[in-house]
Image (cartoon, rainbow, N blue to C red; front, side, top):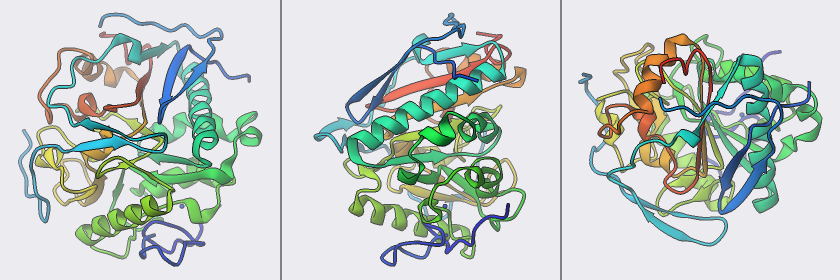
Length: 339
């Protein structure tokens, strides 16, 4: 099924005229507690085995100021202010859930996403979810099957991308195409609620346009606000073998950016070089962050992520956690083999 025609910037075919021009088996439920804008959601454990065990890039960054991190406040249910921490502390073992195989992981991930979506819709009438690329989309495949295909209120979903390659939407490198082919074409989310970048713009212009679009959506309540940053209900992220997430790479100056929501990168150490990405303060402002890591190739890096805390920028995936929310890592046994 071909992707729908995108109007560019923050939406697809039915984009609101006020928006800027931007390009839309029973589950296994491990026990966990999710946080959504002050709302807790409990998932009951089924037969999943959950294991909790102890376990230099330099480049040109154009048009982006690099400085310390700011502050944000919880919105949607009351308003609280939280300062951006200089030290986040060591990741907790209870934030890690290990599954025997991909089938168990994917089933539990689908249940988790459905629970967070339901809580968000009950709290404020919609669900803002952010996708990334890589193997994550394949891991979300259970959402396209029963019971989720019928039970999820897809019309309330608003979908964004944590990072995107600045290529055409039908290009093999496009995260939009990856998500469309593997997930979005199979579920009934209104096309106008798929918020893709404007692929007709330059890298810098596309980043500015996407940020402007999200700012418009905070004014309409589609996206929450958090004292200067957007607060999304759920970020679904993967981890690269080097510890990067979004397009935030280890030791790259982009990790330190605080004065932008969306930043351009023209010297990505991983091709293609031109991308846009959420900045770290936007990631940390999320209500829920869920990482997925599978395969033996992630084992060494995952052990570092759950080891001693490193300075901000050394391992972006270690720093990518909510300052006021819930973090969960879904991993399989091969990925957890060195913990």
